[in-house]
Length: 201
Image (cartoon, rainbow, N blue to C red):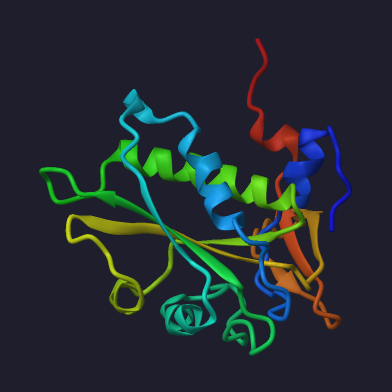
């Protein structure tokens, strides 16, 4: 569990993607709806508030939902969390398609804002999060009842974390691929501030 802090940069640094959880520890009742409540209050392009949400917390529905997710593309030898380390809750973020049959740029912007807000809010309560863009919409759609006019834009998997995650500088080879060591510690390379802040006028 993280210590309470007023340092927002510390919160952002600590709220890393989490892919292994303590499945024996259920999320406190009301947690997922609280996170959706946090998301609905975030800024929205044109204030259109187009996003909708579905939460999944029962063990039966989690079991049906899990196979539809693709875990950790850079960790080719890892097929996702084993039994006992799987998420204990999911939040599905949905949006409608525009006249061109595509999710609008406004909806994608809103999704990023909402997902990051929920991840930070979750970590403020010691809950780990993995935000997915890689998933099988057919499998997920069979696991939950989706409104016909809405598509899944992203999925958040949540639970009490059991893996240690650390930020490290991008190395001389320039690789941004995350990796794990022999003890299972998860490392996430991040570019230096001087490399991304192009100018200060």
